Image 1 (cartoon, protein in one colour):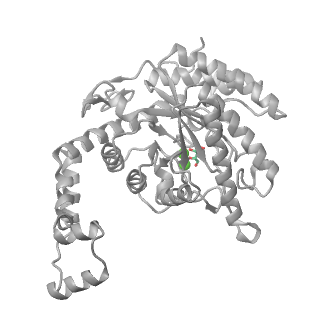
Image 2: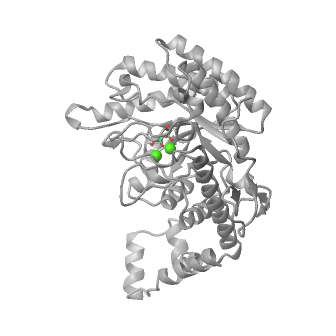
Image 3: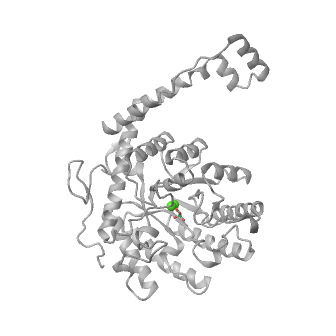
Length: 438
Ligand code: XLS
Ligand code: CA
Ligand code: CA
């Protein structure tokens, strides 16, 4: 088979002292952390769209990146070559999972039947490559946002015909995800939102989105797909206001439409920051509601303020993310999918390795730091003490619903001004630094 990433051998762990840019410094897949291997904790995935289909284009200019597997004039040959290149990359990097959109792996044809045939052909190839390697599918999804037919949304489109088209596409994408043994299936509402209320029936669109998701729940049952359905929040881009704004909005939506038992959330770091939240906040809100499913591990640029999808290399972010994930019991089903792309000027195939190696290393280091923080219990003890009053007589009466405004008024009238205690934020931030630098 043709080799696309020539000159790169399997990436190995060499430890923090290594100066080899093509080695892991912290990610040692077999190292045990809190009773589980690093690989099992982190469950890394490579995304097809950015890593293999991304060519560096932006709003101001076309592609800058030329890939050998993208060179044939026959689009199906490109699809096959790209799949070979993807599995070569995954194997050399030592990542177990991949993720894709239907339209990433096979180009659309003139009609749906032909498009689906193309998908079947490529999926058969992907299945064979999965069988020959240790690579598995983390999740599949539908691209119902790039084609012009979806300019006004998919499930929230004003036209029922386009709703129907989106349903067909999701049906097929769920089936191929099932065929490839996917751990999950993601719904990111690409254009499920609006640009102006002057032309939008917001309430009706939300009802329609819920109907589409209910159909997906039914179809999951019909085909016997055991994977986890996931919703991925994002506040804006491409539409001005997306319905799945953030984790809190998604949770309210799932509750309103009775879908809580069928979905979890796929939290993306860059979408959290676009919603003016931290990554850690979005993970924690999901975990607190029992809905932490999977993660799109990337980062934004706070100075640019759009969805830059950069590789995650901030040790504070990775540590605090892993802290929440460990406390929630881990991501399984789910994983850390690098929904990130190299910069427009990073035009060499080797840049894909540098990008993933750095991100994997920072999550590995973040995992180790977070595990130590949890094992020591230092932050947990602080939190416990801060809320200690709730274990006392008054706290217990309130928590058990035994008192109301009348009783609380009597209590305070008798007791007087409550005692205050410091939040100790600066001390805790210093402690976090000690763990990271220690
Ligand atoms: C776009 C989203 C998208 C989803 C999958 O901003 O991150 O890539 O993860 O459709
Ligand atoms: Ca994403
Ligand atoms: Ca993104």
